[in-house]
Image 1 (cartoon, helix red, strand yellow):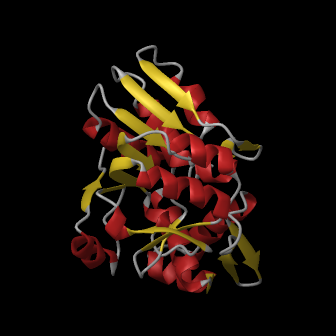
Image 2: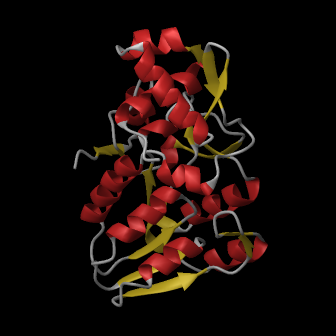
Length: 255
């Protein structure tokens, strides 16, 4: 499914509080109980929420991410807007590193008409997409391929990426917590992403609205290490102040 804005907001509410009753969700969203039950049914069918009698709770934990197919469908329209916003700022003739994630895959699709790009990635999905751009050189890191999302991790990937210094690192993330930490679930993936950040002159973070206040186990970086944030909705509190303090420019993608 492609979750609509109301369903995205419902997910955010449940993730923030851990659980909620159908009545609470209907009241806060300003819709009928029937509408909430229909949304909850659809989200539960895809594994994004877990139902219990009278309410729902967050399906994901701090130690395990949603499946790739679920993440790909979650707020797909918002991710596409983010991807277009990123593509508008990426100049022709530059070097990039794209990491693992469904948002970076959306960005790869938005870069298909750019010229003279050199792209390094540890994401086989990104590589497959950008191979469709004949004016783009794609360099794939070596290492261990994770079957669930075709991401490449491991020491070989770290050693490979350390050879380069690129203009822009484009990274996705699983969660941004209220303390300003950027978090993910797999420490092996985090180590690769940390190396990517270290090898870039600028770091651009692409994160849709569902990532704010979402917990995950492993700290990848902090907002102070980011130059640009691309998202699809205005960040909720306390993030505007955190972004300003960290000196992060924010691009909210509206189209």
